[in-house]
Image 1 (spheres, rainbow, N blue to C red):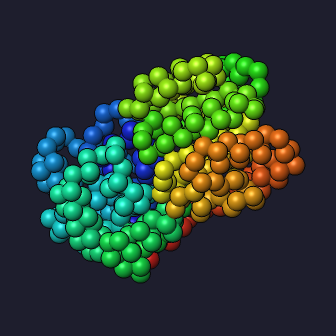
Image 2 (image 1 turned 180 degrees about the horizontal axis):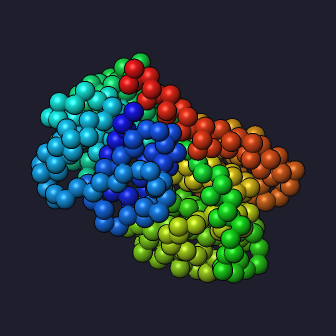
Image 3 (image 1 turned 30 degrees about the vertical axis):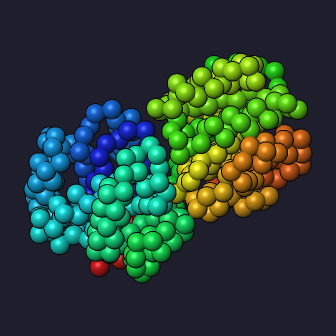
Length: 368
């Protein structure tokens, strides 16, 4: 088959990493193409398999990019076109190209949560209505929609009328070998005295770092801990100002974005994810693979990964619940050991070869 993935850029996001990982892991007998609207600021180029053809658009305006993509598809004649994030423009380009390709959307986030995300411009009622209408129109006409969790599928079916027959739940892949190698690397960060709690992710509103910091503040009243935050984003300056306040006593450190976050995760005592919502939560699986016990707030993606009390702890979106779960892991060694042991087994379900095989079966079915 000829398989073409389309994505805006290869910046440090979850969708970008999934696109590169899945396409690189597909059977090399397929002709694999990765089409980017921009090659600037890409951080995942080094993870693209040698057999994958990478094409970067030369046009800047969205209209010019639309026709450029249509010409590319007409020339290459792919069997499968899978857009990540660039759903609408890709669907129109396929229609303009008149190529008999199967269009398979890849959706990693609940659309309703995305539209309510203050980091984006959908707070304006007209924009929300237009985007919601376009979602209903284009998603119903896609040949299939791959979603990362059942929660994302339920949102599309219930709120946007996408037929459930078109929805396919395929969990994101995690490269366990890369994580193991990264976790074994040296970390030049002094931990200080006491346990270390780590959080990783984009410093944005949806990740709800104020909740994380509030939980750390509560925790420090009884069990002093150090907190590491890995990631960058628009919220960093404001969060650093909060963490500089006396209650934290210099115990919160911002380590920035790192190509290898696993060295820090593996050396922490607890990994915490406090997102307002998650479509899946790759970083949870990565922490589990590092052998670090995890605490996560409940959302459509996290409840599909974490079985409470079995391979991690799920909590409500409030500081006391997060702090109590961290304390439970730090003080109950048998519980910690059970969570870690089960988590190491469960992450095998998300290994790259297994997930790539599921994608391959779907593409074969669609092409047939």
